[in-house]
Amino acid sequence: MSLLEWVLQIALLGLLGAAIPFAVRLERSLREIRRDRAAMDGSAQGLSEAARMAEAAMVRLRASAELAGRQVAERTAAAEPLRDDLRYLVERAETLADRLEGLVRAGRPLAAEAPRVAEAPLQSQAERDLMRALALGAAKAGR
Image (cartoon, rainbow, N blue to C red; front, side):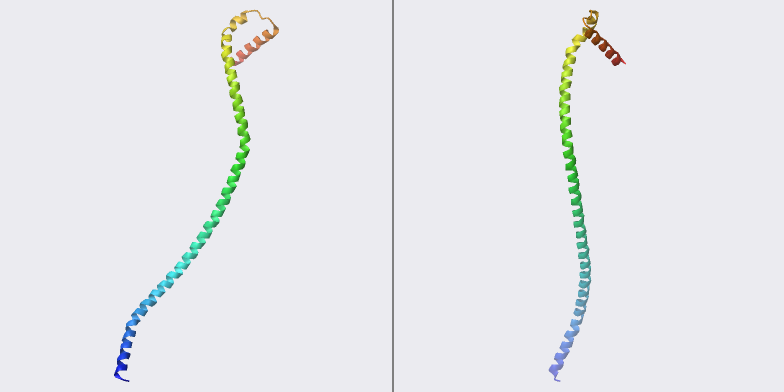
């Protein structure tokens, strides 16, 4: 071998010796990347499982909400006729209450004159029955 070959081989050996630490560092980095990749794959599988579970929960929740909505709609539909009946009854009751109030106001002056009417001789059996009923009503109301 010639001197040039020896120099080239020694230079090559030096370069190979210098490359070994870089190769070791590269191998460690690749090992860490593989380990991180396995952890990331596990995390991705966990994430996809969690996403599937969340999607299934949303489907169940949506179904429950639709069922509750239908039940509320049915109950509302059943309650509407009752609401209308109650509204009608309240309107009638208000009308009757107004009429009764008017009759009471009109009857107050007559009630003040009632003792004088009682002193007057009664004309008919109907008037006597009416006075007896009024007296009985007043006695029951006084209890």
